Image 1 (tube, rainbow, N blue to C red):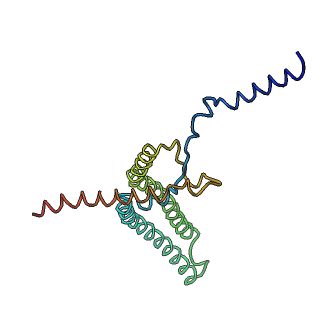
Image 2 (cartoon, rainbow, N blue to C red; image 1 turned 180 degrees about the vertical axis):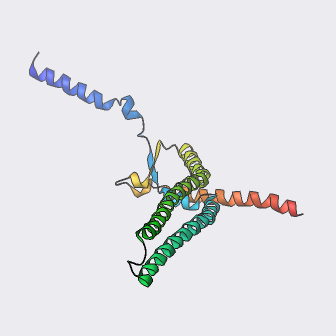
Image 3 (cartoon, one colour; image 1 turned 45 degrees about the horizontal axis):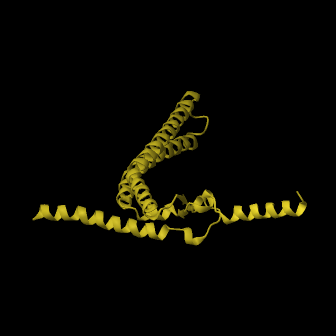
Length: 195
């Protein structure tokens, strides 16, 4: 076969590959969009109530820690006054050690309780926010299904992207509507009970 004939066959074959789209070329690329999840959580149904409950409960925890802090500061101040009033040598070594030990025990108890309360606060926050986060996830799943999106990413995971792919405003509007509907549905039974 001559070189020109081979080149013509190769060229025709190559054109045929581009002229007949393959299965991969026929399928549309999956639609990937992104949202600002913090903006969604800010308007999610139940978020305000969960935040209010958490703030009330955490105020009690803070008050407990503040009281413990004041007790420690008072013990330290009393010890320092005793040293100043009677002189460093006026207190026996046993008395000094007893007061220092008492202060250290209070500090250790504070650190332990602070750690417990921090864990308790984290657990309670997770518990209160779980239904809120679930409502956001459910709304994202609904939007993804309705719009035919293959994937919805968090905006923090997007290094660079087309702003037209940001669907935050759409989902925020839907969540606000869901929050209003939830409020209306809980207000109606309460109004009926009063009548």
